Image 1 (cartoon, rainbow, N blue to C red):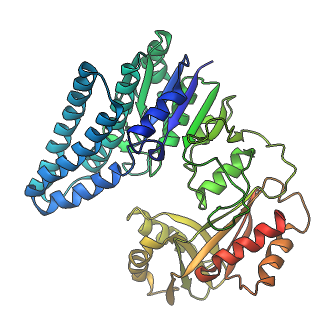
Image 2: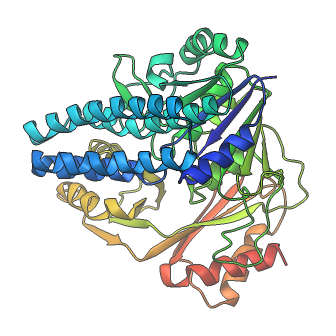
Image 3: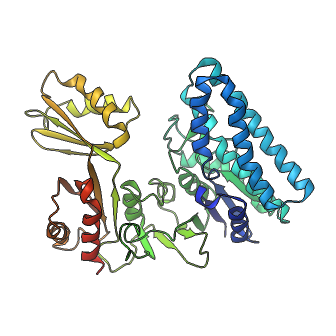
Length: 455
């Protein structure tokens, strides 16, 4: 049985963490690894773009910081002389390519989406070389493989690409399969892929989970383990409710809703490539490797609990678009969606009435969205209001549509705390009910709902 193991940035913070990852991988056979960037490196690359735009003189210091980040880890791994030199040379080669890209950005004063995606891919490339070098130093055969070269194929969206499952399956089977048959552990860079034109594309923030699922699908893996620095999915955020419980199992649908609406444990699209397969998916904690973690089932989870988890997102804004008949005017939503899509602004949800359209968006996109939509206020749209002090709560469970009175219990629990529900939606998903409250009421509201279903 082939196993795919993915390690996130939280598992790759320093040399000690890398050594722990090496222990987890152990002497397993037929195992492919997918990695995120070393913790903090993607942020360094994002900062490097802005600093390079300002002046080419900033580039040497940028490269020194990136080099030191990875050299410190290499020193902490205590590699033998020859292996250390090989790894240092591999890291230096990657940094030289980063230098060329940053110099081009400094020269032009701007960058294309293709160049930005290419530059940000180097965090994962560097991490793959570190881990493969460690495994080799420990007596195992391993090879770092870059996603775009082995054929994780996507569409042409540079920021939030979709994986082409079948094209990826054909390519990875041919290029990665031989390594596994020879007992070589492939360490594959996550987060990015290759568009149809050959350019590098990104899979969205935390996209390495999505990468790993595509690899598991392509290799017909029996098991995919997503290793994090948490135990898996919980009944709610433990920082908000001390009595939060670990979930032993949830369904694909529940995991997707929880991830989309706030639980950052898993990329929302991770389950897509695995739909219809027999691959078992686990979320596991590298700090507690004996803990089984959370298993995510392609079918029903088999749990008795109606509610699986309560998640929250405090980084949302709501745009209210007022006007007589806006809810039924043909073309209004199309115009709004086109305006925001052109700015790469994602709409989380749309709730409409006869006289008002509500758009849930990321708080960071609030003011920009408001300015773009204002150009439409010359017809049926009369007023646009941006609400930034809100938070969204999603109550997720695969049996919510099957049991009477669940929604009543949710809103009664919130009302007992004298918290006003600003807006609510149910039925759009068969496994989720979500509602908004003032951000200042968020923690109390989550605790109230959690206490109701997890006494």
